[in-house]
Image (cartoon, rainbow over all chains, first blue to last red; front, side, top):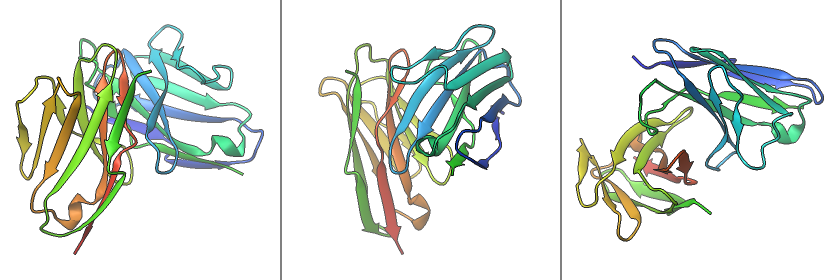
Length: 117
Length: 108
């Protein structure tokens, strides 16, 4: 149980275009999902917390107009990187937390590797 | 500022050796400390530590937390090549704050 999927697993796009990444909890409902970014040999950095039916909470330094997050249902959150630039190239990982779970209880998706050319 | 610092950043040992990975933390409202193993993709959960001095074990892996000194260690005994990975430590307050990880490479 507690499987989280992401799609696509990797994507290459041209500078200036937008890319949407999906995060789905397959066998549980997730009231809260998290989006992380990981640069090579760096730690996971929390970008934003996504709560179903409400606006995402962004971490300091993360541009909410650039990284659009939508958590329209209890099993799906999407991250759209708008007007992507090469510096946005990174590994994006989502995690999902079941209802009533402790804050530590997160199940990670497999990640999406974004390359912007 | 909340932070989690892991050491060493990288480590290369021979199969069969024992390794100790370190994690120190400074967070405002500490609740627990987590260890993850990250291979090619997303991290997989290893341990959650909440209380000081109580060792958690899973096979050849064990971990302990010292809430007074604000650190934790992860031990791996009789290492195998399959243990090669990045080991992430994370402190939990209202969110999870990750360290940069220790990149462990086990030589056959």
